[in-house]
Amino acid sequence: MKTSITLNAIDPMEIYGVGNRILEELCRHYPELKVVARGNEILLEGKEEDAENFRNKINMLIVRRHRKMNLTPYDVEDIFDIEGQTTSQPVSGDSAIVYGTDGKPVKARNRTQEEMVRAYFENDLVFAVGPAGTGKTYIAIALAVRALKNREIKRIILTRPAVEAGERLGFLPGDLKDKLDPYLQPLYDALGDMIPPKKLQEFMADGTIQIAPLAYMRGRTLDRACVILDEAQNTNLGQLKMFLTRMGKDAKFIVTGDASQIDLPNKQDSGLLKGIRLTENIKGIKAIFFGKEDIVRHPLVSKIVRAFDNDTE
View (cartoon, one colour):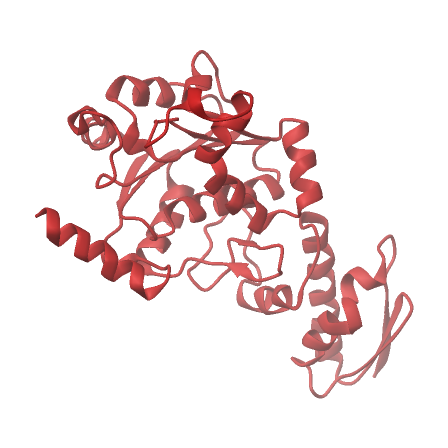
């Protein structure tokens, strides 16, 4: 049979992709269906079942385009993997949490990251604790960006305690923002991987995305937001309590930290593990613990962490 699809109210290039790469990736799944794209019209010739299925996939891509900055061939792969999944459901380890600015999917890369993703969807407060390189903060930010793109929240708030590790703020050049940016740079880097630069600037300018030191959270009530506290091992118990009690209506909180990298003058002052113990029996709160085996950076990072840990044991 012969039929056609007309793309209305959307630029065909946004669906076809540069050099028709997205369309070609979709056609690869229908080897018996002849597909010809002419402007905003797609001509189909083949089995009725294939044509109807192809039409459904085009519609899914259109819906996805309205939720994303842009489409890539990875989106074609994803709609076949998670067809029928709603945006409010947890993503599986094989599915993308969000797509990076390079078009590659950000996915859970090991079982513990999968547990963290599930915990996020099943709870309003998640603690993620473990060594450097396990992807705790990266996954947290990916979940926040996903929620923002799906309009499940109105804003993302990222915060860290501005602990002086090696240099005093007063001796650093520039205004307060310039002094604090080095502490917050890892958060900027992760956001930059997932949101195009121009759009990220817009979000930060209008307050949709806020990055600030922990002290700036005092007195606020954070509604309809995904709020991430990074480097939480550098908070004392009072600071952690202050942060957690900022939670407002329809908010999601994620607390990440590494108990082996405490920068406080007295390491016993760290409130992260104490806070987890105090809240472990509260419904709606979940703690996820990463180990050295969960490190996903360069293979040497895992060996470096082990070497330093062995020296201090």
